[in-house]
Figure 1 (cartoon, rainbow, N blue to C red):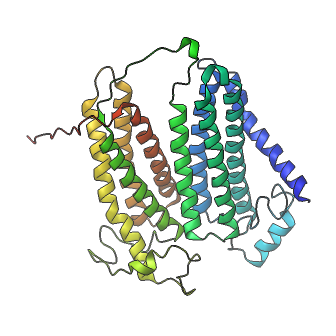
Figure 2: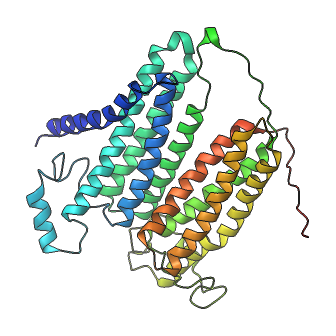
Figure 3: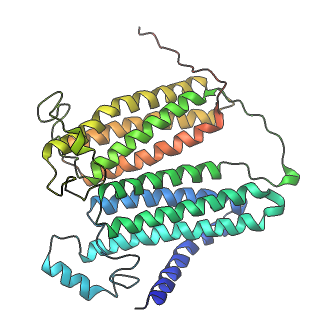
Length: 376
């Protein structure tokens, strides 16, 4: 299949996939089309992140070992002969029929998000007179970001799941989600009907920034654990290999540019290095939970009858922290079950959503407010 024909078929698949949510939007009453499209993009990107985790956790990242197609075709049906031959030669290898479909569905979802962002750009351009330049510039920025994300998706395959590439791929997906939520929650109202709305901003932006930095570091460490397959490097909890502070090798564990399963010298990575990767994520979890917990408690205490939405988001944030702790421990205790691992990734993305939503009530002038509850 020629490259142009392959790209045309993939574009047609993206249009079909993107058409499904568009049909839904056109048939739903309520908000205007542009606002609904923005929130659908948030929903689709969240789903893409979770399905990307499913692709990684089922070892399907190389289910189609080329990019953007599958053995030069637009879908595994057309490449069934090559896939079955690879599977017959290596039944437990990276290429199987099921893994090929998982990988290609992940790519289809990514193309769908890209197609919807293109539509967002067109809609923002068509509303240039009524909405001004900001929505268009923001949408163009999102388009650039999703293209960069697509490039890292390609490198994930061509560089054979190199850990730092896969880690950056996940981090960029979360950055894209944060930017989409920020874009969607803007009041892109018609200029003629816009009114000035004063909203209280009692939440400390400094505390929110602290929580965001802690979450970013913790997610990076978690992605580094997952992409290096170091989840079971410490098979016990709360100790690691029976020690409260296990043997570590920080230099080898956090050498970023190296192939999967190898160290910087091209030799098999040492178990101690994998322990270090796992232990760093587990230790920093205490700091991340403390920072995010303080933010959630502060937001909950500052909520009143006029800020019920902030109260709901604060409760969701605290609930997600509990979920993250449970699923993180479950990954160790129950030997990395797929459901717990998926929920752990989904929880990270949901925490990003909560932090961005809380920016609506955050101000740099607001003091950090934590009321200590006295024990009875």
